[in-house]
Image 1: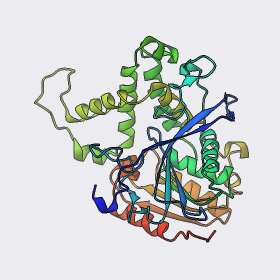
Image 2: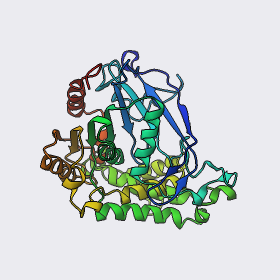
Image 3: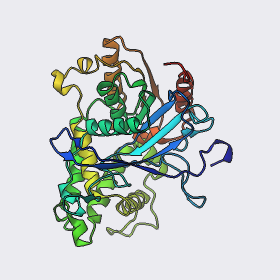
Image 4: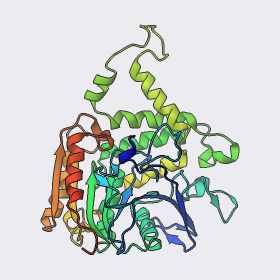
Length: 378
């Protein structure tokens, strides 16, 4: 990370909200915290704010480092910083950890004020709509009445789309990347297999494993291994690993192929840093999101009140959120004569391509974001 295009050393902040948050599923959070980070400077009329919505395993640490000794920067550091596609010389960028998360915002691992114990299995089911409503409260707290843009990839893209539906007057531009208007049956099936791996782990204890001092590590490992298979394209897996052996054939069930080694490493790493109850709720939020549902399945009607201008980006090798799903969003927007630009990027990395520093992809975003006026313009 070079000094001239890094946001540098950053520190998370916590916003506490004492007003209850009514949830779409019928539950209520009596109070909640949102952990967030900001990069760049909010201008005088507060017209240059950009919200980053994270995907399933994401969080508030989007760019920069917390300490000089950190091995890695934030998860989208290649995108955010001075003179990067999302230029912090121009924009005030906000990243946050959604409610239900496990990186500081109120979630299953947090203390339930009613019991003085971790929420655990009692933490309510949350939805994309709930996330956007809580994010809007953070914008209120920051005094930001209208966002210059909301940006998200994958599940984050669904949140960006929902912002334009729930708060059409509060967002000027929406960048929906590697996303979809809802999940296909196949995608829902992947999520269910992942959840069952966790739920059937003997250490899960119905979601109250905190009280037992254990973690459903085996289930989390399997869930993450399955996820990684869907995030990568066949071409990338073939290029990175192929059928390479680590130390020759042993005719056993030990790790023999490099692909096996990679998946187990990713599974072990994830199980050591992510909460199982959060994973269950994040995947369920993915399953439930379908803005067209209350409009008889008509996405065009669901998007009829949006006022934002859109950039929709897909990747040719993304088979989990295929370009065809992005084109559904584009068609629905065009049906309403909304202003929408669409880019289908040729990339080999599969669904993970939205996180990669692909020159063509970054150039598209840099050009688009560069055209957004800030200052007194509204």
